[in-house]
Image (tube, rainbow, N blue to C red; front, top):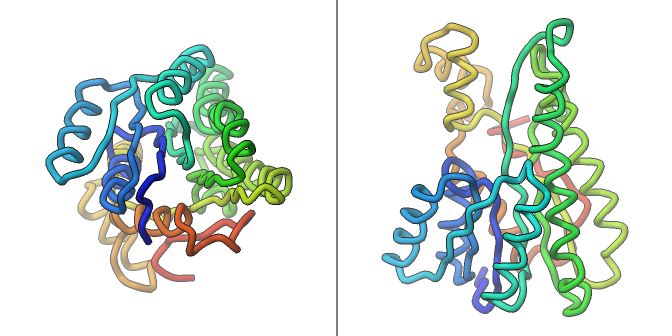
Length: 251
């Protein structure tokens, strides 16, 4: 699944699934623009990719700020001349029961998780249409399908990404551009650790409980998600579009 000659931009790349995705795409030969708020972590990631023989550039960007998105993509396009692959991975949680959820917490999650994906797609779609090739991957969640108590904002944003994925796939499919969503289940990241802290439970016990409900009897790792993303970015997935791939260790 060589991605040689392709340029990818990954949002939320400083840690977790985004970081694993950037490393995987670079290992497959893509030049990767890694974007997130934490410049220090991005610089470390670029160094890791370079040490492995890959090419990458760090672009500081807060996806909750439209002007920062526009500036970041302008920088990436100016540096690399194109963006073939977009991975909309950036996401946050602001968990609370709906009766207590404050409007700013609703807005923050929807803006970061959903609106930012629409804005990022707008920045790359013109060049993808012109070159008649592109891959757009939106990272959603199983909770976008099942819902989750205390996460009305998060579940709504992730469900919205699934709808956005299908709409974009229909809009641009005739130009050889695919748009798919990847929906992880329990993956060992900072976000899942924060969920355990919110619930007031021991993280290791939390993982054991989660694994007992998964057919493969283990929790996911960021690399498990990155491998699926890499496939969807490749030519081998050219007849897959508008789909949500659930990566959850079983049915």
